[in-house]
Length: 477
Image 1 (cartoon, helix red, strand yellow):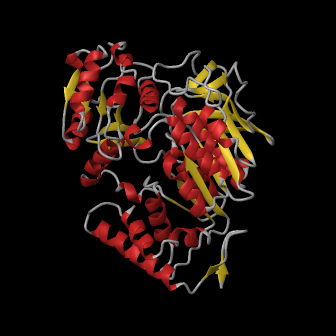
Image 2: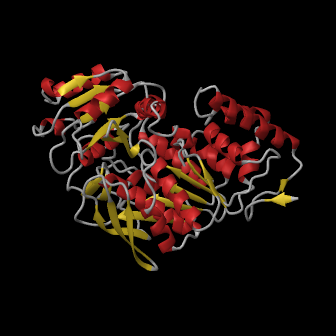
Image 3: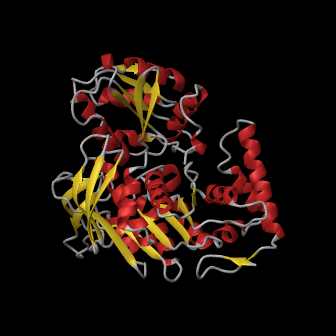
């Protein structure tokens, strides 16, 4: 017997090595969770690959329609969750890595968890978010039918290095796509658009509403020079970080034409987001349950990805409107009758945009900021000096700020130099204590934002899980 997506290599049912790898991987995941050592989102992949180095290739080849890979510095988890929802609404069986384990071992662990003990997989699509540096390897092993490129910002410089190196990784992955694969790219990001030019069939998405964004680059913007010739880029409109309408006077680099254009954006606050999208078949209205201008490209990319997969426009739009934010990405939790919104903010671009979205509108009665420096966050936290925390000093009407995390002292110092009064700052170290303190400061009927780096989100989520207020992050679909 054989299984596989169109054009995929044949997969034989009697593969003992594949079965052994799947069985051992699934058993490892069960043991890790039973011993409360985590969600088993990575180690099963290590074990399975040790027993069968070809295991991910073998499992991916069985997807009836293929694999979708979504990469970029910010927005991978949110975009992938939306794409999976749209594909599932069309009646397809979809498997992904909603926990956010996006290195090659995490992708393998997710595929192993979806397999039967004989190593066979009954899915239509694998939809994975993938780390930018892992992309070339993921493309080689998964042979995706669709690759979506979101953005490139400075992030974890001690691991990821400079953006030009990451852009080269993206270009390598794009150049290695199998015949017939589609590459969808953010036309508004010059690095991403240039990397996607290596694709045989590139498609693009773009925010074209002239009413949103600003007319200048923010202080921490990453891409100021043309990635093709090195001359200074000219920005006519900035949507988010360094993404927007740009051109290079020296070599003519400019955003490519986009098949999916958000011509109208309604991004007031964090409670909702609306887009009017123009594509070849006509305009479509998109809504989401979470907001912020920085999520507009994610919502647009998810819709465009679903359309390239073959999901009808209205099916995709309805599914996106009904999907909640993934854990830690604007997830709203309740504790003691008070509500808190968890916002992942892990680099200057993301922190700036989340900070503005979280304080958009009237006074913010309470706010929490959390900074960790574990491996998954990046050991070097000097990036906080590129975040516009001065924004907080310009808002004297706001309330107290709870500062927490393993590098809370660094954050307190940064806020001092930003001009935030010491009387507004309160350092609370243990995650559970910081969580409860923010809840205590939150008035009834208000949602207080907590902007946290990656492992700080996990710390707060574990504290909430121990109190029975949320499900473990690895159970979140």
